[in-house]
Image 1 (spheres, rainbow, N blue to C red):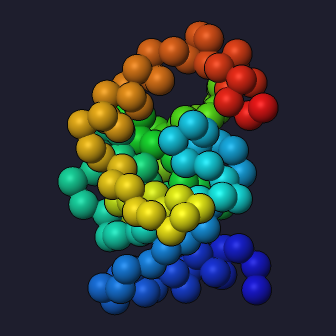
Image 2 (cartoon, rainbow, N blue to C red):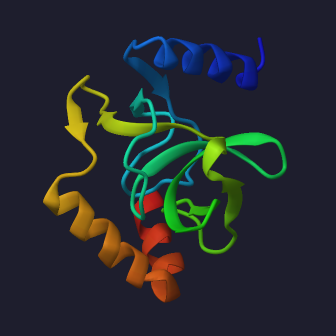
Length: 140
């Protein structure tokens, strides 16, 4: 079964009211979500705004788990916390779920929208010009 089919199945469960924990791959959400070590808990999308970590079906027909950068009318711009450049775009209706918690390697759940995490993600956003160097330090 390919990744899209697995995610489709997970989303069907979310839409039926189940809590779904989905493993995260890749480094695009560093430093806040560590791929191959952590998972996210998905919920139906609600109260979407800047800073929400969303699972979206983006323009080139793939799923991404990235943070919402901006919403203008019906269009959403997303960017991974670990990305240096590049953004994805989709319609609001293409936001399929939102991540509510990250589950660490010790199976401990951490709410993604505590005051500390919101402030940290805003500071991280302001650090885009030097993010490249910080990510190098984080990865090693």
